Image (cartoon, rainbow, N blue to C red; front, side, top):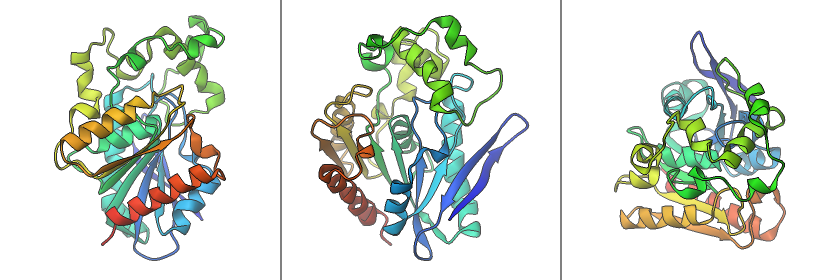
Length: 289
């Protein structure tokens, strides 16, 4: 059963999260962060199969919205994720039967990136799982035009402008917002759109790259990535793993051979099932009492 709560609001926006209970009391809880290039997506993007997969394995689930770019920028988006963690720690135990001391953060793509960012927060989760996320937005894959997206119909700037709102957006459907991402990746302007930095350089982007802020108290982290990912390069998870190992952080990378972006949509594939079972095992180990 789903319970929707407001975890943050002011006079400009309201941000919601959906809570799904586990099959037992005082359950460890997963904060799930949706993807969408930070430009689209909602808390409802997690599909029914994955909801059941987590809750039937003993985890409560807290799927969050957050402010979206380009109307909001990364500092505000990261603040929302921090506030979701705080809300769950302070209010979650009062409203739901969870153990607020046992929190994992799980996300895919942009949600995986935000999950990796939580390891750099003062208030960290116990563990992190990143599905095809990224730790470095200062690299060429992010700052240059994407050869993959340039193969698609070119989005004119006039059309892009039509989809940008004058108000803060906390929920955005792929139907109405994907063209924002397509335009930004085709033009090599995605990093500008999400950060608000007009002339991005490695020096001024490092603040938003978790790969450069790993310390020995970074949470144990599981990375999953397909080798045929055309949106986020597989190497992003390889490099993140290497940086975590350098700081002696417990980490693993599960490679999906020939796996594409959002590989878990092929839910019944034995390779995917095996990877997901390893996710559960990793979470159980690091969220144990």
